[in-house]
Length: 299
Image 1 (cartoon, rainbow, N blue to C red):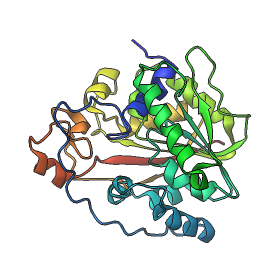
Image 2: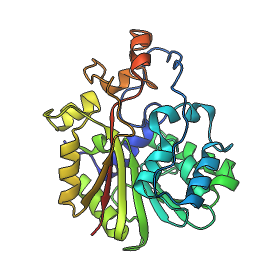
Image 3: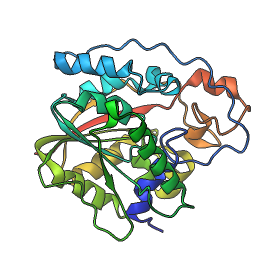
């Protein structure tokens, strides 16, 4: 059954504390993450020097946690954002920010000359809802570090209300990270993409990453729910149907060691380790998932 737009956004918030995507909470205590790869940011050719300097400062900033920095060697935030064409004077909309992993990188960069809007669940919603709890945690994080997050604007997605990301053609960039597989099979994916298309200026960018399935895998909700992976071709076709044009692909977040055939899906891998200590060293050696990194533009 298709899930609501509210659930689509909340689903990625609920799981952000683990992998930034869907998946059950491990039954056993999560084992140690193992040693992540070292991260040395590499400036992209043609990157804006002022933005590059702000990104590097943000990556080292106190608003990020040590646990977040430990994922940099898998997620390559500087290279990813520079591939998308981020500039410090942009208006950027982040869909489903989860625990704020990327928000913590973006907010200081956009603080002075740009604008960051994060689109997620309602911190004043049902107190028993995990989505509400996680939205509230994100709100508290923002409030605790006003120097970094003081200018961030939160856009609440509430059940039964139209999705409004802002005035038409008011944003330079819409970003979402490891969320698209949550939306597979839900009719509201069209609503999400239409809203992103509307808020973007002509020439604006939709940038995304997600866990990449092997070519030929069936892209239906049952498969996506079970594995967390979705094919690159399906993602491209779906987004292009919404009016976007594919502007580029990057392999910066590729991982050829990811065999994508685990009983617990992508959540067997770090940092989730849903299998607990079972084959922990094997999964630690693989690292985080193989990810597509795609850039689209609004004509």
